[in-house]
Length: 128
Image (tube, helix red, strand yellow):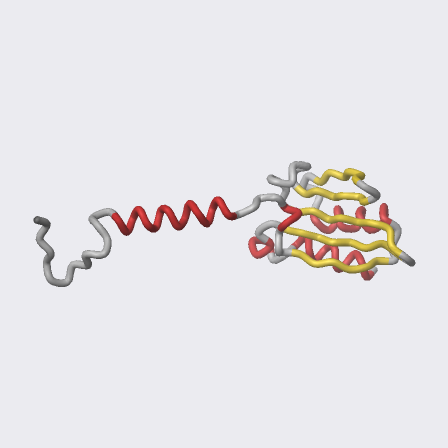
């Protein structure tokens, strides 16, 4: 027989709370998709600037110390920040031709850390 003392919850065995917390953290981590293209931190819009000029402006505003990589894929120009691997990139700007200009969408992982520097650059460059 296992004695129960007053004030001691019996719903969880000893160490059970730690196990439950660990399971919840593991489930949350497994549910996270690291692909930058699925990030909710971002925005989209239109720009009348030519593609090369717009992407050059974004690169300049992000900073020269930050690695950027440009790729062409399915009629879009992709500007990756940090890495060309979508699971490791810290940001992504997608640019595609649209009627009268270019449509852009920008995603930034952990935008709160640098106050959305890439998002702000993409928006500012779209208006210039």
